[in-house]
Image 1 (cartoon, rainbow, N blue to C red):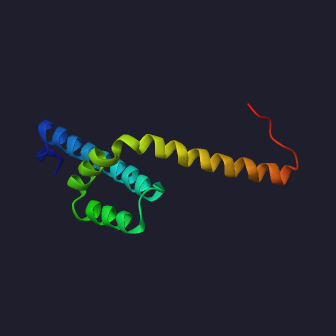
Image 2: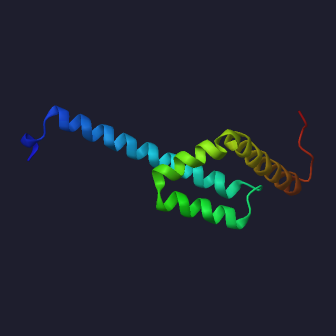
Image 3: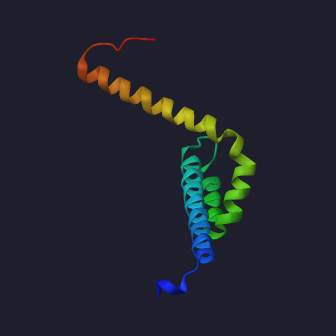
Length: 101
């Protein structure tokens, strides 16, 4: 069985596997952005999720064109909210205020 695989077939398999991994990482990023967006209504989120699930390649491509410019800003807002929550929790459990800076 191993003798049937040639170098070209192995390279094509590596290319297709790499493209699959890239698609999965893009899907995770798009789904995270959809659910972290506070400017989208529930219906809009459901429609985006449905569109990305039914047509994954086209859905990710259209989402990145339509809303991709704000993905970084929404990600930073999410991380900032999580950081504030964690700091408040630590401050509450420690009883002291954290240093500002």
